[in-house]
Length: 292
Image: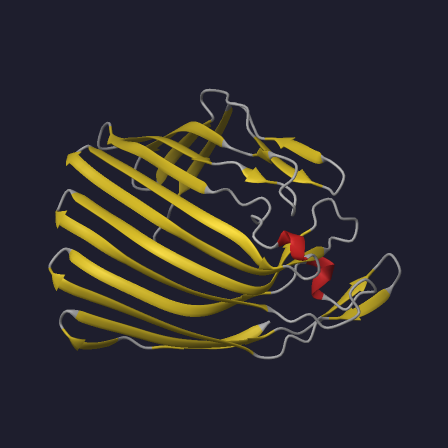
């Protein structure tokens, strides 16, 4: 894969910033299956053009309105990227076109936030086939996504800061490749909301702690949305960091403090399969930094 990207920042007025951009990519290569010693060419995706544009309006200090529009792309994953026997014809890339509008607020130096609404449409989307012996992907078809993102960070007093982020989204199939009955179904394994939040506390000048949570809503596991919803969870975690000296710092992380059961669930075409997540887990690291 290779490509090029051009961008510029234009500021015609103090309160207005414009950012146009343009990117072009080409994907080339081949794949050799060592089990049968056969080589397959990659799909001919051609040159993939991706224009982008963004604007920020700041009518008052600490208050900004922004919007952006652009195109990106997705190609198949695994052997679905190549002209293998099950996929003898070139598959076009999925062109993702989307836009976002929002507002950023920092009315005082101890509080900031962001609220945004976004929408994205994709052509010819694909996803990995889990447990596939060929590491293949399958075509979902054309899709629409839309959602709202909210972020807030508050520093009520110097050693403490609180932060949270919440996203709600809708992701549906608008034009399946073969089965019209799938129009309007939710995209498999896509939760309708995700969230995180936490409290940072600088215990001492050298010791910092973060108590935080992360989680998501449930999702359908099959294209027809006929086998129930799974996958929702909320986990509580604790991070500790100690600066021993200018060179060495120690990090400790305690994941899933409440030992909550959580899992990733998918459908293999015949049944749902469940992969449990970790229970209580402890991780540690020692970092050394040298300035040469």
